[in-house]
View 1 (cartoon, rainbow, N blue to C red):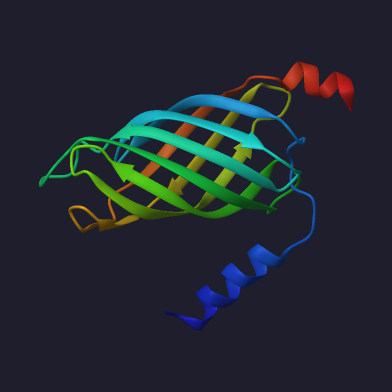
View 2 (view 1 turned 135 degrees about the vertical axis):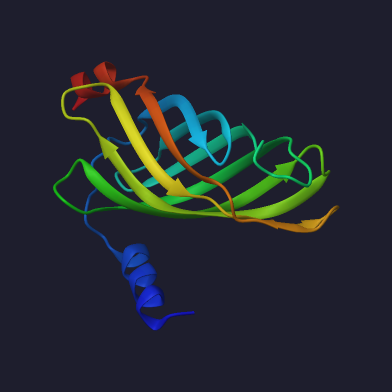
Length: 157
């Protein structure tokens, strides 16, 4: 693996600056690209989040079908406090293949100013290591989410 990429990932994971989100903020929306589905994200701190994705990887020629991923993500601000890079890892399960795997995610996340909208562009490859073993690299996508508790959170802060 390229040394520059390893250094960038290390810096992103060890950054202690505050990203844009309020702790406990949650979002729900759609994900489209290499797969199509529903995405839910919940922040546990200003730069740590949990994201779950329930989708259909219809682009897979071998065995398209429904999958679920649970990702733990680290966010680091890039340009200002509303645009951040993200990196994460978590388990994944493909129902048609009856396969358990590990998913990674790397991308960018943008909270639109003064609007309850969040956009994310990412790449989420998955390696299935039990059941039907397979590597699924096609899952690049864009997500658009509605921030569910934005008003309540902004009143508290």
